[in-house]
Image (cartoon, rainbow, N blue to C red; front, side, top):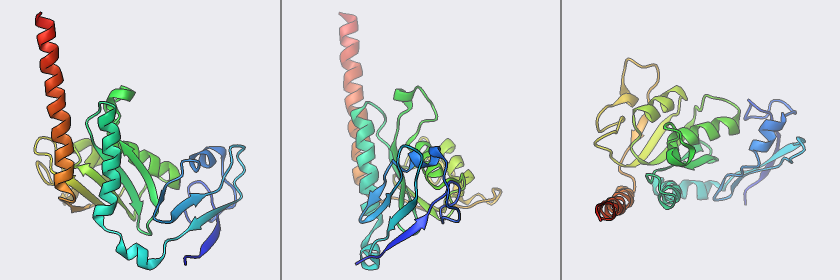
Length: 225
């Protein structure tokens, strides 16, 4: 059985060096991220937090986790994008000790925001969660290879590792078109793992664009009548 540790939590300090927390950080903790027994708990809407209960997973369970398990969660996010008419890309950020800090999907259309890619939204959520714009010792799982914008954001955030599913021959900035994660001219390197659940990620993208083309063809026929 895993042990529970009581740790004071403070904005800007994930290790709990302080005992106070502002209301914004407290509210952010209401976005509970959980996976296989790892949970952020605590906080209330009045701005009083107290202590943060941190349940750490059993080490044996932790070793059993695979890249595929996390990618399946990213695919769940991608399906949310699909169902809302967005390009189906999903992403999540996990810390080295197994805490899921963020999960997100594409929302560019819904937000009228060209930067609202799954990776960027997840980075913003994770930074808010830990109270730091540097996300060292974290890994991102994303269903499709990040574009130039997202790859740049990952480098700025100092993310340690990026694991993606499908290659993107038109926009991919980590292996397909560019290798920004390994560019020696930049001051940070990304460890990149590709092809995790690649077939599932590709199938979802193909399904989305196939249905969109059918919709466009149908609309073209209606417009010509």
